[in-house]
Amino acid sequence: MAISSNDGGMTPPSPVPQRRHLTTEIPGPRSRALMARKHDAVAGGVGTVMPVFATRASGGVIEDVDGNSLIDFGSGIAVTTVGSSAPRVVDAVREQVEAFTHTCFMVTPYEGYVEVAENLNRMTPGTHEKRSVLFNSGAEAVENAVKIARASTGRQAVVAFDHAYHGRTNLTMSLTAKSMPYKHGFGPFAPEVYRAPGSYPYRDDLDGPTAARRAIEMIEKQVGDPAAVVIEPIQGEGGFIAPAEGFLPALADWCRDRGVVFIADEVQTGFARTGAMFASEHEGVVPDLVVTAKGIADGLPLSAVTGRAEIMDAAHAGGLGGTYGGNPLACAAALATIETIEAGGLVERAQRIEQVLTSRLLRLQDEDKRIGDVRGRGAMIAVELVRGGTREPDADLARAVAAAAHSRGVVLLTCGTFGNVVRLLPPLSISDDLLQDGLDVFADALADIAGS
Ligand SMILES: *Cc1c(COP(=O)(O)O)cnc(C)c1O
Figure 1 (cartoon, rainbow, N blue to C red):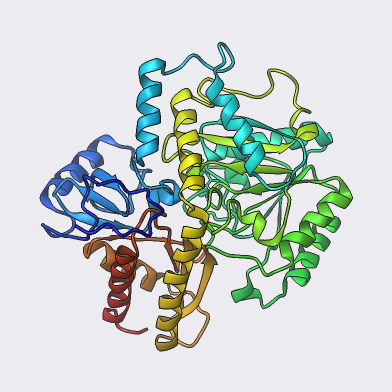
Figure 2 (figure 1 turned 180 degrees about the horizontal axis):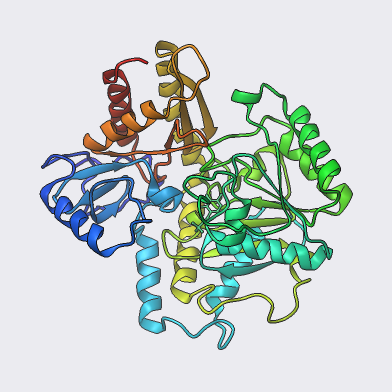
């Protein structure tokens, strides 16, 4: 098997062959049997994208229980950025698990936590003095960023945006825009959350400064001065929406003028995913607080809030923390992940993946009017599907294309407020050959589905 040399040297002679190969139909008999057990044992509220159960994953491939090898265009939702079971991560976690699994940082602290904080302070945008605090999930970190902003400003209101996704806990569900499936039936929601219009160039035809003015006018009229504005620099679940140029800087400037804490939710966009270490960098935006999770530790549960020392230190001692936050295994994995990203040139690798994906997708768009928009940055690229020649969302088509790709051995996710966006989120350890093969499958799947 050929391992391309363009993966930043991350893929060792891998036990998981780097190719797409189906030995059964999808799902195979073992996956079908497991799905029946899942149905009887796991709460019905937990859905799965793929109908197959995984056994191993590495590089750009996931193997299932029936021996099928699937191309991974999902990275477990932008988590295994350095590739699942990346060698440095495996070594670091093995060493840590043999030393100790848990003491609780709030009881008996350990160096790994401090080292992760130091790295986050160094890597996030801006050269000002920073502090970090570690948690388990993206939602938990977003909640804590809001707590910190409230403590530091003495204000309560928080502004989130149309198409936002910030998590599934009560406060983050309240910040999230989309009702079904995230909020439907789960109220009442947290108070003092306000929603502003964002920037969605494909659908609002506004330039960045105009869209920012529209948002700021709404905030000034309806909220006044909030504690914080929470925003994804590129919206993830909402449809990989990159705001028009100038939108984020204008919003950040307004926040600075009004003493509003600018919180960048980089949970999905962080850690080289978008062809910069953090997506805020693309427009030189320096957030007051940066929230990270997903790509931070190759799948071990870890999240963080990093930001200006004077804001971070506003929360009283004992006000922040949690039993597992900054677990030593997760910290070891994060340090190895960061080393892999930096030593492997993965920011550049994400830029290269952007070229491979977008050049092919833009060519497809020329031939197929159902591809309304191709957008995103780095290894976070989306295709918005519409009824040919209109901008009317076609969620059925997105569903059908994803299902066809699944049955041909490609893990492909959809997203978007209208459910009509196919998103490509490969691990940065994927080879160019696998990218092309996965794109072939996408193109064939689209071509096979009759135009609507
Ligand atoms: C996934 C995600 C979250 C929530 O993270 P969890 O770890 O699932 O709680 C928050 N914000 C963004 C932008 C995300 O993509």
